[in-house]
Image 1 (tube, rainbow, N blue to C red):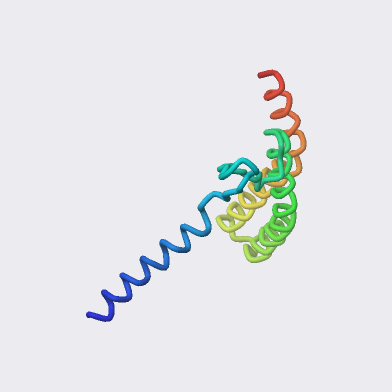
Image 2: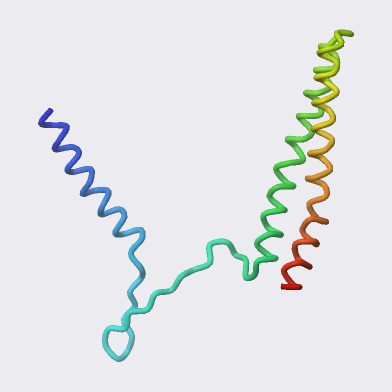
Length: 123
């Protein structure tokens, strides 16, 4: 038990040091003595809200299209698995319908982006 409390104490010190080094702002020394300047870099590489939404939509499309292809194949397997059973066939139809709706949303992301862009420009 004594070792566990020592571990917790040392772990908290290590955690504090990591936090201090990672999240402490950069200090620069200017010509006129010590000049504290904090520079925040933009991690998103987007200079406007529209660029941020466009990059998010690109990621959604790049990740969504392969997933949707897999889901279309899965609903096809559900049709084959139904083998004429009405309840399983209805479930497969519902699954395919949801995949078609999801595909329309993902592929219509460009239109959604243009709607968001015109709305934010109007504001």
